[in-house]
Image (cartoon, rainbow, N blue to C red; front, side, top):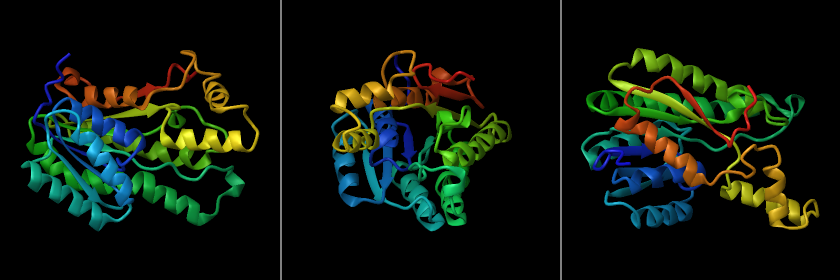
Length: 261
């Protein structure tokens, strides 16, 4: 299926790895010009090289901290200048620390809010005029299935991410018909973070080997496995495309059927 985003301009935040990188790769594969960002210059350079090997569009990588509004402003401005506009925004952010409610201190809550919510607020605010000027403007937020169904020991993600969904639902009406806004709710995907967690558990003797650990992560997934990050990226690219032109204000689970709610 041709998604008809060839030549469009896209910005994906927190995209030097994980689901952000997978989303950027899906957009690049479809021919979009893509800006990625991250804080680790080595990971960012590797990601830029990976994206440069797919698709026909241009790739631009910029070091940026999405919890710094000045960095966000410069990131959007640089993207618009390089690609003569902005058609698609994808917001992603690293997960907050795990832990139970009583484990969390005030600073953990404030940091999680800046990382997950304010980063999206600042980016969408800066990007909006350019998205509205496009004839294909979209914003897709990468959230988590935890906004629908709490996950043990993830009180920050369970709580704070829900604010992003409230913003998506609100602006999908306020920005219509000029800009469509949606969210994806990923379950477990085999990102570098999951790989690291499983390998650490193997080292501690909690699993016999890596496959045993991955199988355990997939135990409650109806499709019998955890996701490939590219599968999430494909959904993000679809939501940005004209094929989803009548879809806005929705939160799409990409979790192998794990959600029971």
